Amino acid sequence: MAVIVPFIGVNRVIGGVVSGISDYKRYAKIELITYILATSAIAIGLYYSDLKGVIIAIAIAPVIQLLVVVAVFGKTLKTYLNFKSLSLNFNYKNKLLAFALMSFISTFLLSFIELDIRTLISEEININEAGYWTAITFISKNYMVFASGLFTLYVLPKFASIHSSEEFKTEVFNIYKTILPIFGLGMVLVYLIRNYIIQIIYPEFTGMEPLFKWQLLGDFIRLGALVLSHQFLAKSMVKSFVITEVISLALFFILSKVFIQYYGTEGIVIAHFVRYVIYFIIVAFMIKVYYNKSAKEQ
Image (cartoon, rainbow, N blue to C red; front, side, top):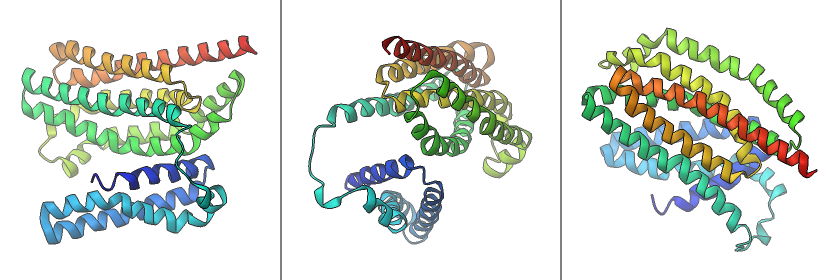
């Protein structure tokens, strides 16, 4: 997997080009073909070499993705990148380090907090309840992948080209009117068929049923907040991103500690909901401050 890391980096760079020009159709084609081939590799690895084969298949997945990207997007990429002129250049190191810090905050610290909360549930209640919470977060992460892909492909490039408060408000309201209702209906559907989902994916985890309501409500507010917070990425607002993420994670941890005493495992998903309500308000306030400051400078 260490050897594969450069392939992941190249995939990210090319993926940035695909997102930057908002080539939706080829992005969807790349993702679809990649998932089919990667899943096939995992199935073959499992059949012939058990767990070791699965691990190898997971490790080579970035190579599979890169080959698909080159096959589908290679010709278009040549019009944007002059490969012959590529050379080692450290001029962008500070900007890249800023985004590395953003990534560190949103991935490493989140994983650390989630692990700590799982341990908290195990110690305060029992290991089964910790399993219920892990299962509901796994379901949440799977449907949130669709949203994050859409935001990266459409919202990020759009926000990068916006330079006034009015334009930003118009675009945000357009997104809220078109995208959020679709995800909202999807979440309502997930809630209505929650028992079927449990039976199919986690047949022995019937105790997780009460967690769906607060998890889905929190995720819906989270989607609304994520639309706004993509402005931090679009405008390289590193300080604002770090501050809001740290506050969000701290809120989740503290509220989980408090609510678990009163509501058990359900208190963790209630903390998830309350966290994102507060996060939404803070992000909206910071963006308002940013545009007010920009207007004064002009």
